Image 1: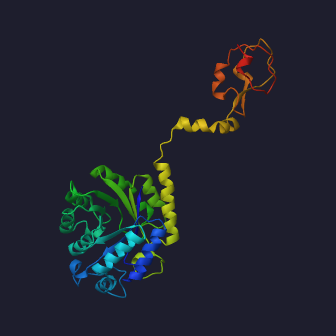
Image 2: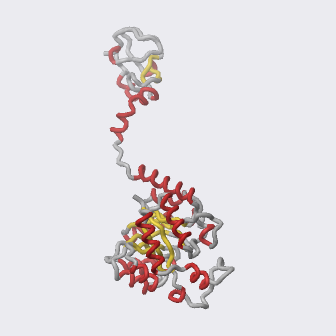
Image 3: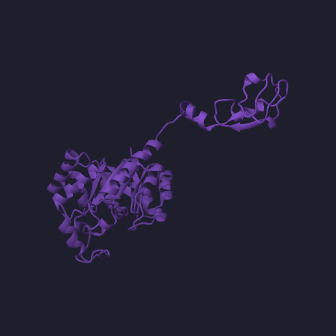
Length: 330
């Protein structure tokens, strides 16, 4: 089954209660995992680093410190996710210190965000462990991605996600063709981290072989922060999950064509055509193609067998507009 991750990010606003509500709701919508972001500002950024354009009312430092969880809070959230809600707990580290915090929590998988792909020291630290690695590629060139993948080669289970770091991303920029190239280039499992609006593109990614889909999730698009307005709300997330599960049934089926058609005999009789006479044909006459019409129902000589009748002699009178049978000819 495709793993479906609800990306919660920092939309929880640093509230344990809100974070739990988001986890519980995502789980009820069918998510397999919930993902947070682990920011330790002083470990990942200089105070003078420029803010993204969506930080207008506070600095990045103020925001990350306000929304950060302690180790104990993360431990409680992980327990709540996995033991009470039945979903995997994930988070993206943005520094070595953030990874060490998550590793201390005994997480099984680590999602490397697009901006950390070139942070080779972080990747090398992760490669020292046995964590499964989910590597996003939203900001990386092929050269940069090659170098990152090489860090984990032969060490960690690896899933590389196609992603385009635009918010929102237009479907023509989603790069599903790149996902296929990633699979070919690295011989690894691939997935899709979606920034498009709606649910059509991630479903297409699943049809093309994605084993993991990540989608930003929010309780309401009106919540604070840049992520919320580019996320999907519970009803749409549930629709995404339902449609992926529906598509999987078709993608992974092993249907036998002939065995299935054998169950459609009644349909064939109703919709297919039989050989029918175009005129009254007397005993002793030889049949030609002009003697045949092809009409429903399909319980007589199939239209595809009409050539078997040409040149045959009629042994009894055949009325006009009736099915011709093999008993009528020699």
